[in-house]
Image (cartoon, rainbow, N blue to C red; front, side, top):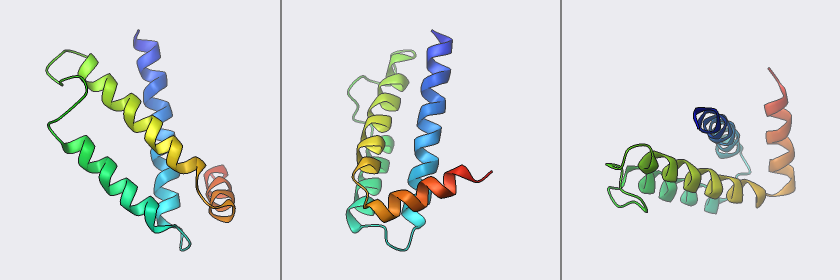
Length: 92
């Protein structure tokens, strides 16, 4: 169970870093910025799919929803922005 959670955390962390680079790109679309704000509001909102007071499940559902939405937004980036982000991610 812990191994799965750590793998999920690494996935979310990688997506968050990729999203950060995409947001800082000069050609980043406006919908990406608006979607990121809405995602942040969801993360801070007290309304959840599974309440946070349920041990472990309350946090895991947030990680799953956030990773799914960030991945979905990153897949819809323009080709040039996606290529630049991939190139930036390849640097150490």
